[in-house]
Image 1 (tube, rainbow, N blue to C red):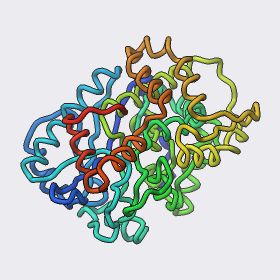
Image 2: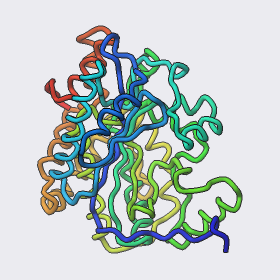
Image 3: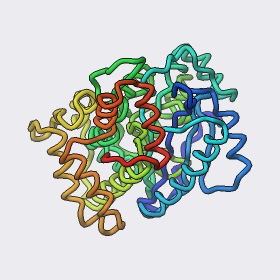
Length: 381
């Protein structure tokens, strides 16, 4: 067996441990357009010791924060805030600002520059203009698993709740200077990539290995990084990785979403194990679209019961069912905040549209986003 077709080994990790990656916008403080400030900002922050990692992303107007591994919401949030404060201090020194949000409201993709790294250059050669259009910003949530079979089971279980995470994180209503009418327009950019969407159905880690080896032998993929699925196993980390979230406008929201994933994972893996069914994905793309387009008012279709209900109703019922799991992890307050947002239909997109109505300018909207991210502005999100 050649190296290219060796089987993937799922690294055992402590179940339900959390890690988060968050992609951030770098903007100038003149008109709050995106700025190619990543090289200077990374040089500055790289001189200081800090938890986690701060690293480049595909274009020079982005950076990514990646946390270490955590067992609780509180420790995760503390580390995120520490990294945020380091980034904000560095940005202030460079006359830049940092903000959350899944898309920049008025940047032009053609003005972006690919960050000088071999993998990013390869992606630019492969995907052409799509690589620069990939200047959108997301949060990835890793949940630890004990083995590959648990990871596949958890992935199928979490897929049913993917619309919840889209709605609760949605913060990309504006794109190329226009209101898109979507709660999350960011996922439309990702959908253009050939290996996006949901993972082909497999029922075990062995089946996934067979699929992965076939895709390698066909010359379609080289590694797991080539899959842009909404949710995927991450064997080298021993985790399942959720990738649908827009970057929230605050770190409190980001940590709350991770706590929600942790509580859901605990619930899914604690229930009696039943075989996943391929027909559960019949409604996946429809439910995903409803979440992106209509937010809390979108419809969620249950493929087994054939019932339709609003995502707001489904989120509230799910959060209520997780009270015991949240208490176990010390995240009751964080999940309570998510429930209040669902009650009031308030997510990042609602906040941004309200900011636009008040300020009247997308430039001022981004300024307010940056102040909010830095902790200098109150938020109801």
